Amino acid sequence: MKRLLILFMVFGLLIGSVATADAKKKRRPRVERTVRGNYGPFVPQVTGCNSATGQWACLSVDARATEAFFSAKVTDLHGQPVFVEVLSNGESIGTFCGETTEPLAFSPGDELHFYLGFQWITPLDCPSQRIATTGTISVTLSNLP
Image (cartoon, rainbow, N blue to C red; front, side, top):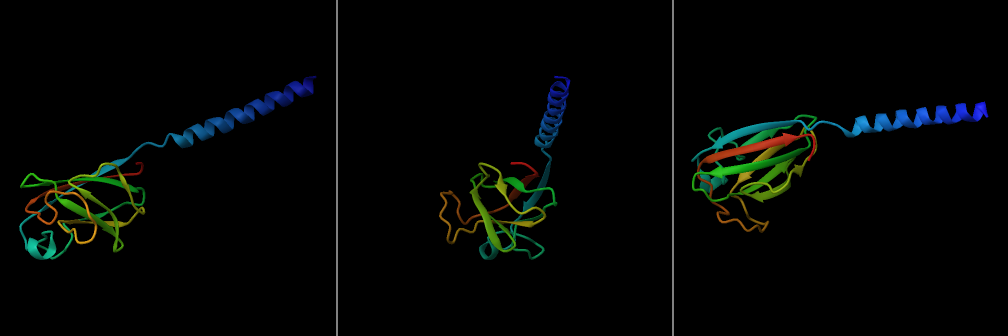
């Protein structure tokens, strides 16, 4: 009887320690970082964006190895939402009109390029599909959605 009682006690301690370890893993804190950029009136007819340095993207963001999701908002001078396409490694990872409705995923450590005003192939109901004047882009990167 003693052996059986000791066996149950050891078994209970093992289950309790495993459950505690699993609970600690699931409580990973959300870490966020916000990057802001401006775009201005530099040849919008050609690039759809406006960079004085010659980049075609309005904003390029180097993501950290711990960041895998982003949400973004574009505020243009004319007050209308602007079509935005986000590329990473030359491939589109998402489009939105004015701001994202939910966080979008990308590969950690990638460089994200935000292009404004281009809507050649992907249909999206956006009032100012190809017009971007001047404004700001705010991108919030995080480790969790």
